[in-house]
Structure formats: structure tokens, C-alpha cells
Length: 176
Ligand code: IMP
Ligand code: MG
Image (cartoon, rainbow, N blue to C red):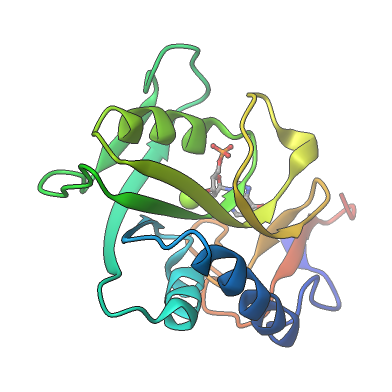
């Protein structure tokens, strides 16, 4: 059994404050289309996109399921929802919840690069740098965190905890 930390790792207030500054960083890039990776980034995407509020900024949602790392392009990543999305010649902002091993974002970036975007930048709410197994860096990062499993604010454990406004650490009974 897992239990939540006694206090949030990152509070809703801290998230809101960081999103204000993050949105300013992203505005300088002038994205034309957001590709949001479901499901973990749905709250982050909603909150961030409102701060970008640009009339011609489009949003599309895609799903990505990673089955481990691969050195070959898109080897073990299943992506759905890209059908019918035209990113050709556009400035694309890819939003995901958390960069862990980096496999998902690395493979996704390769796939999107082959779709003719003029520029692709990536944004994650959380970055676990110490967990990286591939050479991938996000262009925009909300918070750096340690090697801990986190839930809340859209992030899940077995599809639970997503609706919590704060971000919490999940530990097993032995506190690990
Ligand atoms: P990566 O391909 O290893 O970077 O995996 C990233 C994906 O794993 C994220 O989009 C999340 O869905 C999931 N993930 C990784 N770490 C956590 C965590 O601490 N909490 C919840 N989901 C996580
Ligand atoms: Mg995910």
C-alpha cells in the first residue's frame, strides 16, 4: 500500500505562481499550436493555456503510451490522436506532465519532427533529472523535483489522485 506525504510537495499556490512566470517565458516563443499529452497534463494544460490567451493559439490533445526506451525513432511509443492534426510550418508547443526517463518526450519529438513543424518546443510541469536514461531536455520546466513518485494536479497512480489541487509525494509503507 502507498500513502501520501503529510504535506504537499508543491502547493496549488506555488503552482499558480510558477505558471505565471512560465507563461511569460513561453509567450516569447509565440506558439501557434499546443499538443497536450493526455491524461496527466490536462490540468496543467488548462491552467497554462489560459495564461497564454492568444486568439490564434490552437490546442490539440494526443495520447502517448511508452513501453520503455528505444534507440530507434518512435520504437516503443504508441501515439494516438495525431491523425488529422496539421502542424506543418507551425510553431508547436508540446506539453506533458512530467519528464521521468525522457523516453516518451524523446520519441514523441522525433515523430513530430517528421511532420514538418517549423519549430517544436517542449514544456513539462515537473522534471526528474536524476531519472533520465536518454539525452533529452525540455525547453520549459515548471519545477525540478527529486526521484520521488508524485500525484495530484492531473498526475496519477493507477488513475487515482488526479483531481487533487496540490502535488503530493507517494511512498510505500516503509517510507520509500
Ligand atoms: P518517461 O517516458 O519515463 O519520461 O515517462 C513519463 C510519463 O511517466 C509521464 O508522462 C507520466 O505519465 C509517468 N510518470 C513518471 N513519473 C511519474 C510520477 O512521479 N507520477 C505520476 N506519473 C509519472
Ligand atoms: Mg503521461
